[in-house]
Image 1 (cartoon, one colour):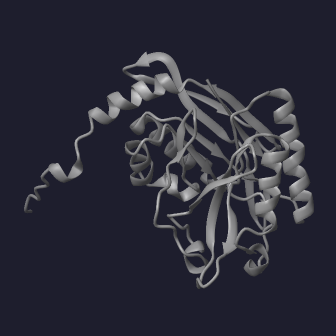
Image 2 (spheres, rainbow, N blue to C red):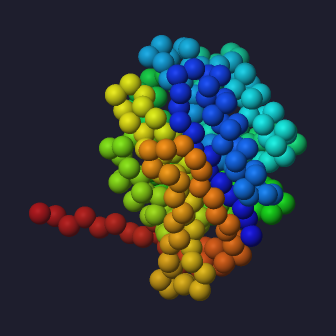
Length: 272
């Protein structure tokens, strides 16, 4: 069984308070769920400023080392949500998610591929999908908008990912669409999805949390039956679940064997 948790903090007004919020919730998760295999943070867990430059760090800056040290100090694997960072010799910064093992070692990072709205003006998109491999499992990180397009989850599933992690920043008005996207991606690929959402108010936008761990009830194959565990609404906290990847691996193998590649299907346009 794979033990997974979404750490759902409130975004506070200064960086020190945000760091404390993260560590306080992490302590509770570790105390309540011994030997948790992996903890995921939301896309945005740091203060947001109208002056975007204040929110952008140098590559592997202070926020990077904060999460890196937490992974080592609490002996837990951590996906660091998303960090805005400027890299040397590159014109625009990236939105990137680092993965640290329980020794505090950086295993790799995933850049956000699909940039949303204003992000396209400020950041460069990633052009590579990373499949992370652990002893127990393999996974991909799809940052927020990356889950809204079927190509990225399908590409991850077809290349060996057994679970998808999605650090997100979904405001109140987008919650219904977000839930549909998550369930659709889980069903069409028969793959568990761990989606960790932001909590708090950023300018006039409200973020409700309600993080989700979506998997499948065992024994239900045709049709498959979703299992959804949710974090608190309008409150900080966390979501936790234990996943049986052997069952979902079986479901996914059956589903992917049924896929008809779109380039093999002819399209015929009828005239008026």
